[in-house]
Amino acid sequence: LSISTNQIKISPNPNIGASVDSSNVPSGDFDFVILEETYGCFSNLADTQVVIALIQDAFGAKARFTTSEDEANVFLLNTCAIRENAETRVIQRLKQLRTLKKRRKSKAVVCVLGCMAEHMKMKLLEAESPSQRLADIVMGPDAYRELPAALRAVAARDGS
Image (cartoon, rainbow, N blue to C red; front, side, top):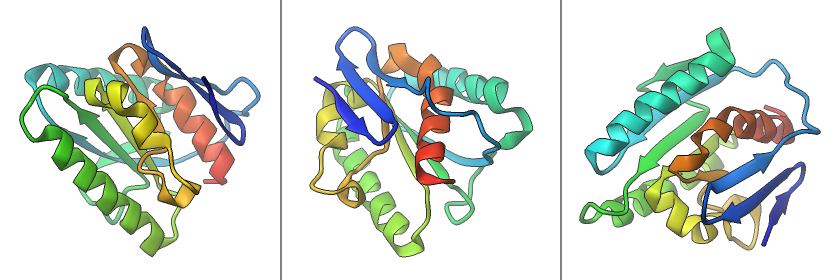
């Protein structure tokens, strides 16, 4: 099963989460201003540090982290399926971010990572139109190394 979105092909695979094929996408000059939010277990805090290091390695000065929602153009939510109410809180937050994107008419990218993302990937990616989708990138823990390629691909697709 594949979901193809312009130049991006996301192939759900229960063994690796989601992977992104961005081989045709040029690596351009993209500036990512990232707001990171971690939900759930202690393992997610460690995973978030890994993701931050991967982004910094891949983009260097072209990526920076912020605590300002108004400034961010990438929203990175690291999720947990274990903690009570985590799924409900994350879905509510994703709906808020979808509304924010529509209001700003911006090219913001919403990334959902972690074990909740892995088991809910189809729900998070399916929608009647791209503007109704809750997330642009969905990856389980085993696919974190693909995040820089996924960010490049979505930015190239959206002209960010």
